[in-house]
Amino acid sequence: MTALTDPNLSIVVPAYQEARGLAEGLRAIRAAAAETGLGVELIVVDDGSTDGTWAVIESLLAEMPELVALRLSRNFGKEGAIAAGLDSARGGACIVMDADLQHPPALVPEMVRRWQEGEWDVVEAVKAHRGRESVGRRMAARTYYRAAAWLTGYDLQDASDFKLIDRRVLDEWRRLGERATFFRGLVAWLGFSRTQIPFEVPPRADGGSRWSLAALGGLAVQAVTSFSALPLQLVTVFGLAMLLVALVVGAQALRLWFEGLALPGFTTVILLQLIIGGFLMISLGIIGTYLARIYEEVKGRPRYVIREVRRRSPQ
Ligand code: UDP
Ligand code: MG
Image (cartoon, rainbow, N blue to C red; front, side):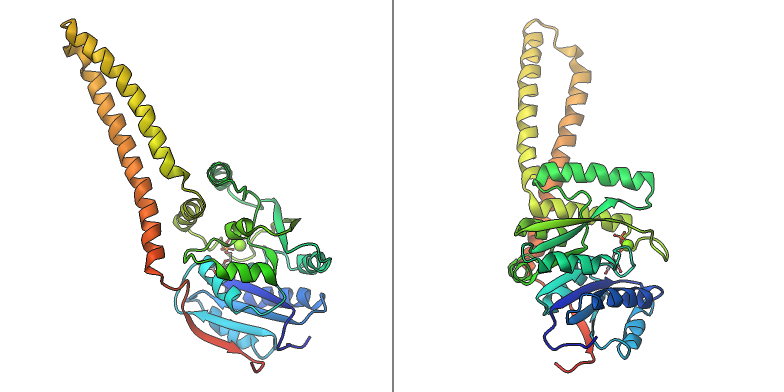
């Protein structure tokens, strides 16, 4: 396989702390990509790893002429790494996949075949099962996806970042103005004609997921707040509900006062204080979350910062 200056297929692989499995992963991805017979560029984005991932990538440059190595200046998170890779992709189609072989490379030829049928702009690999995960994590994921689907109108359950997108989709993706991107959600938002291929998620060969629970939680909040303003409107709905309660309780309080029995309402007062206080705090939190999103976007900082680019073939 030779690296073309004008590749037909770009493969974007974000990698964070993957030093141990990366060489094996990239070789498998590369072998699978070769089966398509297309000119391939393999864009690996080192997301600020501190474990020697960059050294592994550099050592592979000689072996893989189609390798394009991007090194981010620090850890920007998977979304930032994907954005960096997509921005430099030049292929007629682009596949995004994980470095850890949890996105089986064997699917790559099949995805390309679907794309070549000419009918599909987005070929998504969807999880047939979620692989080996703890019960807690799985239940949390299910609850989250259900709530998010209700709030945003996009059902991302079983969706993954393992996707092929046509050049046209990629160009539209690049026009999206937001700083905080969410690849999976934005591809759904972009629309186009889409088809799906189910796949089994194999267990991670080395170590656990690179996502901390806090990072996952952050992504969950970001995913909802970038696709839906419904939580803000929920605040209004809560307020209206509280107003109804207030009318009823207020009428009762007045009646007690007129009947000269006003004192025994102490428990009611405490409860109302607590409930209203709780609602107010949650509402402020929701507003604060959106405010923070607006703040982040208004600053207009880049999605990622590239420290170094290495490629073997001349530009
Ligand atoms: N990843 C990244 N930056 C991060 C965290 C993860 O680029 O801050 C990459 C990681 O190297 C892998 C992919 O994103 O290629 C998915 O990560 P992981 O396998 O840890 O997540 P999971 O399989 O649980 O979705
Ligand atoms: Mg993984």
